[in-house]
Image 1 (tube, rainbow over the protein chains, first blue to last red):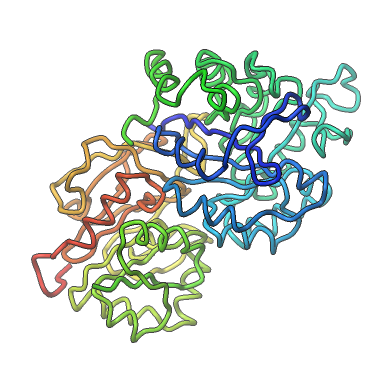
Image 2 (cartoon, each protein chain N blue to C red):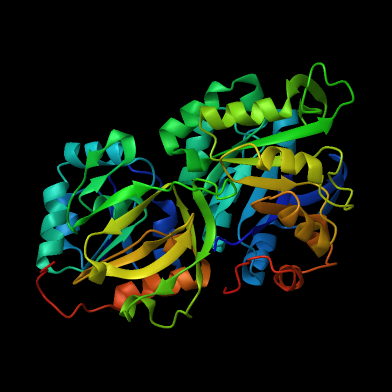
Amino acid sequence: MLTRRIIPCLDIHNKVVTKGVRFQNNVVLGDPVEMAARYYEDGCDELVFYDITASAERRPIDIEMVTEVARAVRIPFAVGGGISSLGDMERVLLAGAEKVSVNSLAVRNPQIIADGARAFGAQCIVLGMDPVAVADRSRCPSGYEITVRGFREHTGMDALEWARRAVDLGAGEIVVNSVDADGTRSGFEIALTKLIADNVSVPVVASGGAGNPQHLVDVFIQAHADAAIIAGMIHKGDYTIGTIKTALVASGIPIRQHW
Amino acid sequence: MTVAIIDYRAGNLTSVKLAFDALGQKAEITDAPERILAADRVVFPGVGAAGAAMRHLQSLALAPVLREVVRRGTPFLGICLGTQIILEHSEEDGGVDTLGLVPGKVIRFMPTNPYDKVPHMGWNRVTLRQPHPLFDGVDEGTEFYFVHSYYPVPARPGDVLATTDYAGVGFAAALACDNLVATQFHPEKSGKAGLRLLENFCRWQPASKEQTC
C-alpha cells in the first residue's frame, strides 16, 4: 500500500531556515543543509524548500544550496519560491531537486505549468497554492480564493477551479497551503484540503496548521491528503519524525517504516 | 570499477550520479558508445515519456549499444523509465515500440478507487518474489520511492523479481533476467535501502557470462 508522506518544510531567508506565522514575524531556526540531513536521518519521506523572500523581493533561487542539499539527502525534495522561468526550473532540477513548485508565477503565467511538464515531466511540476476562505461565493464558488505573493495579493481566482486547470495543464501534484491555518499549529484546514483532494486526479499535499500528530491523522483520514507538510512542530523540537510516525501507525495510517 | 550512467536526454541524472558519489563509487554520465561499452557496470535511468525517450535513443544511436552491453553479460541496471523501455512495447504516447531486451509490455494504471491518484507517487512496500543479490541486506517489505503513471508487465513470470501493490494491481516493481536487473522505483531517491541496492549492484557478479533471456 502506498504510504502517506510526511514532508518537513524549510522556509529559507538569507541562507537560514526561518518560521513565521501567516507569512510574518520570522524567527531563525538553523542551517538548511544541516536541518535537511537531520530530518532525512530521522526518517522524513520528502523535503520542501521555499525561498520565501524570493517571490516578494524578486531574487533568484540559491542553486548552490540546492546542490548541497542534494548531496546531503537521498530522498526526493522540492524547491519553490523563486522560480521565474523554464530556465530556473531546469537549473533547480539539474542541481538535484526532484520537483519544482510554482505558485505566483503560475497564476501570472499558467502556461509555465504546461511548458514545465512538457520539458521535464508532469511529476516534476508541483503547483503550490495559497487559498483563503472568502464569504462572498459569487466570485469564488468553492468558497476559497487564491492569494499570491505571501498573502499580499488577492487574485479573484477560485481555488478549486485553479486546481483543476493546473492539473489539466500538467501539474503532477498540488500543495494546498491554507493561508488561514498557516503557522497557527491549530490543525490543517480539513474542508479546504478535502475539497481539492477529492476533486483532482493527482496527489494533494496538505500544508499549513500542523501542530501535533493528531492533526496529521485528521488530514489523512478526513481530508484524504496524500502527504502532509510540517514545520513548526518539528523545527522547535516539540515532536520528532519518529514520534509523529509512531502516532500515525497507531492510528492505522500506512507510513514508511524502514529507513 | 567503472559505472556508466547513460545520458539519453531523458530526465535528470544528477540524483543517480550523487547516489554513486555517496557510495564512493566512481560513476560517469555519458552518451558515448565507447565509454558505455568499456564500463564494468551500466545504469540506464530516465524519467519522462517513452516516446521522447525512444526518439532520443535512436538519434543518439544508443539502442544497438544497449543490446551489446546486455549481450556481453555486463551487469545492467534499469531505473524507472529505463526499466519500462527495456520491455517491448509501451501504451504511453499512443503506443510506442521499445527496446525489447526483455519480453513484455508497459501499461497505464487505471484506478477504480478515486483516491488512488496517478501518478503513483511516494513510498510503497516492495515484496521480493525470488532471492537476488540486488536485495541483499534489504529488509522484507522495505518501502522504496516511486513516481510513475505506467507500470511494467513482463511476459515471463520468472522475470518478476519483486512486486508492489497499487491501484488494484500487484505490479512488477523489479525485474531480473541474467545480467539485467531493473527497478520501477528510484533507488537513488530511496534513502539507505536504495543506496544498499546500488551498492549491491556494484558488487554483483551475475552467474551467466552471456545473456540468454
